[in-house]
Length: 256
Ligand SMILES: Nc1ncnc2c1ncn2[C@@H]1O[C@H](COP(=O)(O)OP(=O)(O)OP(=O)(O)O)[C@@H](O)[C@H]1O
Image (spheres, rainbow, N blue to C red):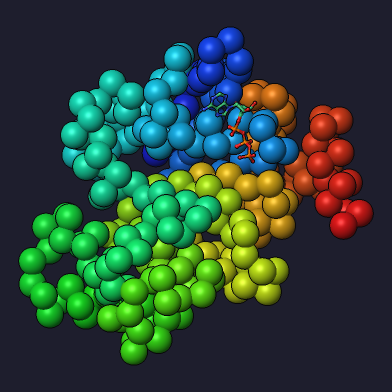
């Protein structure tokens, strides 16, 4: 099987400082990869390089496109990469306001993604938006309200609807439950798990919360000082961590 995403020796430096280095992995269709590590370990830098937001200094990121098969994302013209970002890829930000248009209604936030990929029929766009609001547990009566009137959890659910409505094949998530109350986090995680399973999504999820990867990720990469120190099946890594740093991460969670 061809990997959906093939990451080869990616490195990003900030001046002399290493953001991330020597990161390689394959992500297969339907697989969820978790990336964990303490603050400053390079998770966001790596995610930015994979999603085309940052230009790595070395390495390759190969995505298996629908139309033309495996393509080097970093070598693609900017317009093509942007198109990927609207169709096959989705990016869920930690802060919903970074992924939503706060001045546009909830329905508009979902509908405009459909329009960006060619949908034109107003009635159908509104129907699909309503269906997606329902899928992320937002009452249909809120469709014309702006996200600024929503709670943090609702905003995050709306951001997820906006991202998934076009049926992407790969979703990047940066701390999707960060900054939310614990009870809100649990509900969001359940929702995300259901959507990932139902849609057979592939995802790369960055988090410092091991509970998030335990629930969502098939495989796990542990990062420290910009490098991957351990990777493997999530349960295996968390239940029997081999690297001292992973052992520390796991035990510090157990003490919480
Ligand atoms: N724009 C930048 N300029 C210079 N150094 C940066 C920049 N962004 C990140 N770094 C450095 O690169 C390293 C990796 O940072 P990164 O933000 O990727 O880590 P992280 O694991 O995502 O942390 P957090 O969980 O706090 O977001 C850190 O040492 C950080 O200080």
